[in-house]
Image 1: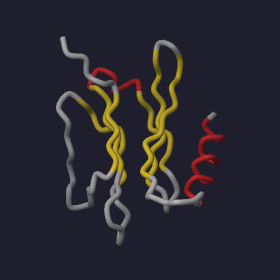
Image 2: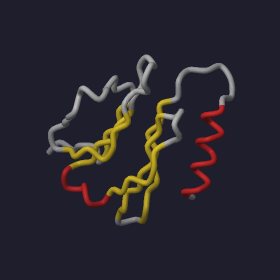
Image 3: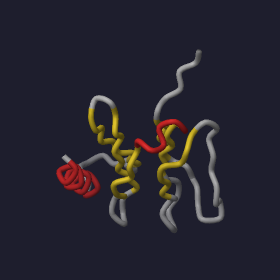
Length: 108
């Protein structure tokens, strides 16, 4: 029997408001953040397997300038924090990393 992943996280979805529905067979959409207005690329989303839908809680999205989704899986071994984050390419430390660290501290 094929084992499917519990979560599917997608970056660079290229989705926008005109695309109202996105589906993945056997999965439910937890959260979707479309690409930022006026920007190329981007967008993130998270799917969870149908049978685990009630076990995932959306916690928060990143700030206005960040494409980041925080969620919590309630598992048999305890809560699991995860984040799907699109970070645009950069050669150096950038403000989005500092904001990520601030958000992580809130959820720890």
